[in-house]
Image (cartoon, rainbow, N blue to C red):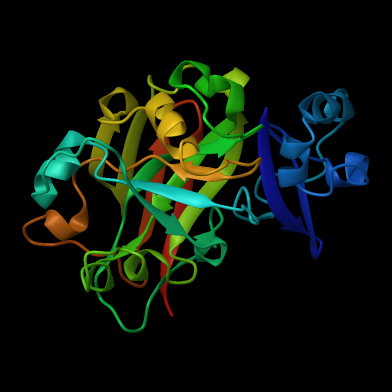
Length: 282
């Protein structure tokens, strides 16, 4: 299934995205599962599928306002420097463990919704990434058991305000301006997507390909990330892990390329779809 969070007719909802449109699950099973996070936490995928079987779409794919796939995660954990080409273009040395940082929920923007270029920076950069959405969660999950805690996968654009990111050795400021992180368009359930290490990721700015890589090139793969993260914190249903960006970021190009008002950025991942965000000034 492809599960999507959206607004239609002035109401927030979630549903199943199909070729013919969106089947509204809020109207059908919302009393039991009021949002997508609660559906995941309640292991409600069978109920969702049963509610949609034989039903006509309630909305067209272009007839809704997309919201971030999970708008209310307890945690958004991002992985830095997780492709060799990106680590090398930054000049950073290899590390024995993943470099992690956190995002706030209000930094997220849905598919087709604006990512906001801050008024106090002209160094707004793109970072296309594969996102993991947690299902059961827990502590001390072994790498071999990683699949047991994953609900599905989506696409993240970890928009980065580079000058603020480089103010100190901590990246928090540059990663947490409001509406700077695209997340969507939907979550593809893990059973439908299959092996997450066999995906192709492409980032385009105004149609020009600026990043292209396959997810088997992750330095710390998803099983390793799950084991490491759960060694120090409890993952919970609806938590998001953004797994890192490939080489080709705008900050490290010559000349540099940054996103500006009027641009359109797209991140496409095979078997998931394409996340599209226009760029607008704050």
